[in-house]
Image (cartoon, rainbow over all chains, first blue to last red; front, side):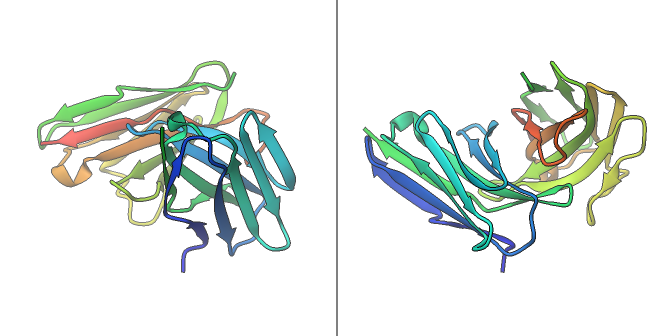
Length: 107
Length: 117
């Protein structure tokens, strides 16, 4: 079993839909990251959080430390949100990556 | 702020040649840089951790003589794939930890796609 599990693996949505991607982890962590990887591979760090909730534009990330679970929400999704979203946790000073969720948003 | 660049973004080479990939922190000093490899449709895998001025620490299964890492300054780390073979074709990504920043925080470069013919 992977230490970081994401669901769903693949997700398609119509433009404007509300999207949720989930991440569960089994190790003790000091922080959790949400990363976005566009086709072509470049990675952008969206959020780093260790508790509570963060919001940036249409993106919201939450974490529940007790349940070892985090969610990434995208409101009013847009085709340009199409990408792979990766959850990663920091265990000591190393990142442990989930396998990613491939999101496609259709106009 | 906190921009990391990689050069080149894409490289195609013949089998047996060596390829150098640069990772630079453009607007901050990076005490630690990380090198990752990502095969198609797979997750990122940490290859090695490099600290400025000291030898890199390689993950299990990564050949240090094949993947030479040099972290000569607080803004530059290089990864050299020596005698590259087709199985080394992959997407190589670096990240950097900012000096004085949170231990948990890493800033990612855009990646380098290596194709070995």
